[in-house]
Length: 245
Image (tube, rainbow, N blue to C red; front, side, top):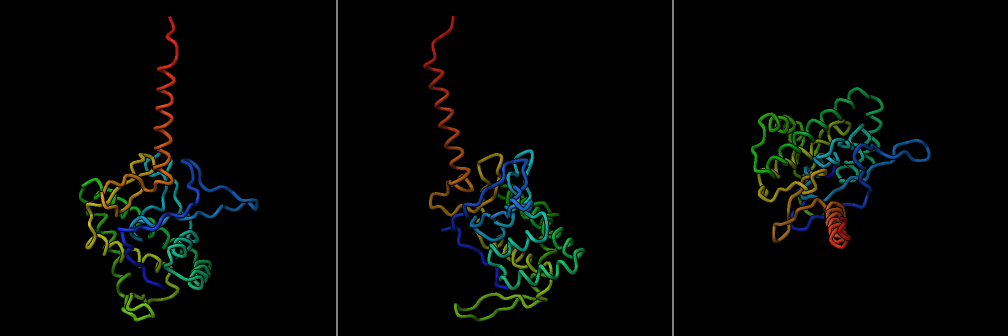
């Protein structure tokens, strides 16, 4: 499995332009009646932050979970380049053979994701993490680090996991390691939550000024800009309206 890497916060890659579901919606059905695959949004400063953001609209009354089944966890691994297509096929076969184990791996993933989100959102708000959330991360580390080895490739040295290739929770190994490295080596004062109160995704602000407010200017930033324009337009119309007696 290719290693998860801490992405540089100085130049995060832009998120893909996949559609984000509206609050209260799941996924649209395609013509065959299947769920439309979700395009995971990546590039928020680190793999562990991207993983924490696999629920949309956390600040709304109806958050949208994008890890509803094990297949979605595999798709996150593929889109994050944690696994190859061959790895994905192997994990899908194993999940079909052992559905109960796949369910346990998915629940473990969701538990880790929620703990990581609370840790990062809390730190962004200058709050200490809960001991229980740190314990969840620490519980994930032994299985992540035990099979970890240093290997040499064409681009130099890197990390490689040598554990069971069919381990259904192996997608969590690079996430757990990435979270541990992030928390112990990054500038945590640059952690942010999106200023959109319905979104609340977490990101690492790699801008020179350190004043980034939105998870994405293309989405939440633009929505705020449109909202301000409409508000000014309504206010201007109100000033121009004749006074009724």
